[in-house]
Length: 316
Image (tube, rainbow, N blue to C red):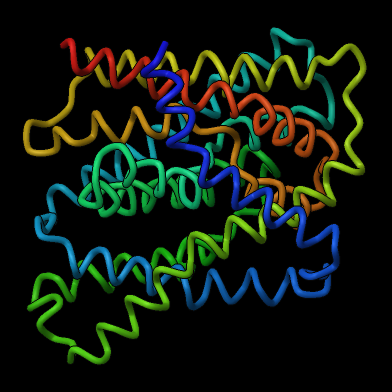
């Protein structure tokens, strides 16, 4: 139990940043009018710098085979999440227009701004690079399989080439021809300063958005959506990911995927999914119910699944 409490306190910083963002919104220090520009600034400037800084600065560079393997596992993890969400939707009698939004939001875990600081806390900064590469496959799955699941037809492949994905490809290419040595020291310092702002800033912006969302939150009739979200993101997907990490096939050259899967297993539904649901005109109310319910239980579910995963791999 002490270990579980230690893990709970260790994962507190991301939650505290969310809380600070919520307080800032309540006090109107971070107004709603800033959401769009601040979010774009994070996606187009801060997070790409974060990616470049970590990929180029890692002491254990990742080869092309490892990179594509990580991306493949990321793609499959989202596809599996969508499949489980669809089965749970049927089990919980989620019907009609609720189904696409439920499956899309339940199938996507909070793979970036929440997972990365937790991965660094428990497994070191070297795993951050692996998470970034894993997330490249996640992005591809979201904008292909996920959009087809959500809309049936309105697939836009151009969305795959978003700033974070382009940054990963650029960083891997630069790493292969010299990496950090290509940049003068002053440029590296600037990259470091900008990149280190990305996760705290993103989490506070998410916290501010959560404050607004929570005010308009209404549970579904008989709580079927919330129960389904818990079954998917709080129970079935984490258990499956951890079981695969322990007993499934993982290439010997990418054994660190065990740690990546354990971190991602513990994550709640991704907030970004709601933005996509809204932009495609789908059922945002259902998406909000999924995200809010999994975020609320994540205070317990994140340390619980991390504790279970770390304990199991240490005994293996």
